[in-house]
Image (tube, rainbow, N blue to C red; front, side, top):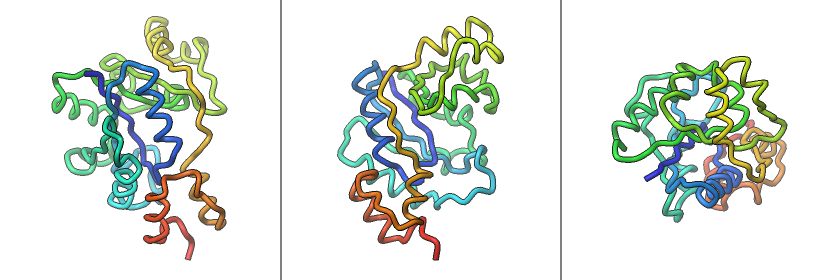
Length: 203
């Protein structure tokens, strides 16, 4: 089985995340997707993020009822902090040793992959599926600055042409602070959770 690994802070999980994951299931050979909730994302040191439990509760609400989606707390329960994707993938590989793991990242992350902790080892060891991000345009020339021609070919081969979902968690948080509606941006159950727990509002 081909299992997609979709990591993120999901603060909050929104319809863009879910629609993107559904499109990947429909358009690729990925059979199911595991959402990996970041416990202590190294690229956001010192930045305020919601508690792991709140984010996990929202993520589970967002994917509830979708049989080929699941949420994992592996970075919180089993791995050191900060949480690096290389260690996460190794741990997942030990748990799903009969399956093929495919790392799902955005085009912006592909552009920065050489800066990730053991980024080149990740690219060598696992297949990486890249989805488009608004405002990004990764090319052979741009990747060739940091990767061999052979690796650039491998990375570009698994870029998936699909609709860009222009929704961001940052924008959703900003809309909440500004008291603007996010009704059509998140699942109703997630919206209820945000309201009931007074998330993202400045008191």
